[in-house]
Image 1 (spheres, rainbow, N blue to C red):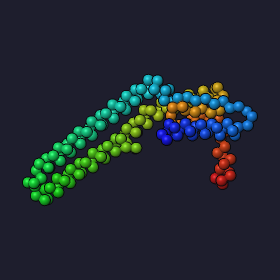
Image 2: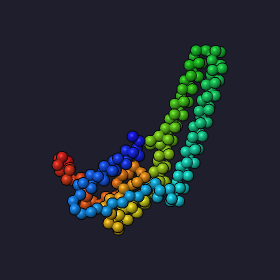
Image 3: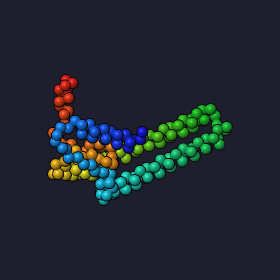
Image 4: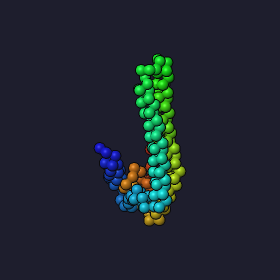
Length: 175
């Protein structure tokens, strides 16, 4: 099952459980599509464009480095028969070190804790926080108990704390 289907099944299951476990009082539930909201915000669009430009720039730099490695390897192949064992090993080591340096550069730029991730956090997180704050404010104002995210991975993005039974379960399991 793909992630969208998994998310829908989990959301449906949660709603079904909530519907079955609720007493007589009706709950106000709604959903929003956070992706649609974000995609229609100018700040978000500008942030995405900046991130795309930055990623393209870094991809080009990395591609240029790989081209240099390819050139080093081609020269090595052409000259290999003329080189002594020591020089051959030295050249191989240089190529290997250069490849490792470029892989490290890729990881530093695009890895899970890389520069692109950090820049995305700097640019996008404040915008997302603004949206979540607006959703919470809307929920309180309109007396919604739960708000689901239709388009994203967040699932429940607002829940009335009245329905939070975490502490009851912690007591039962002995914290």
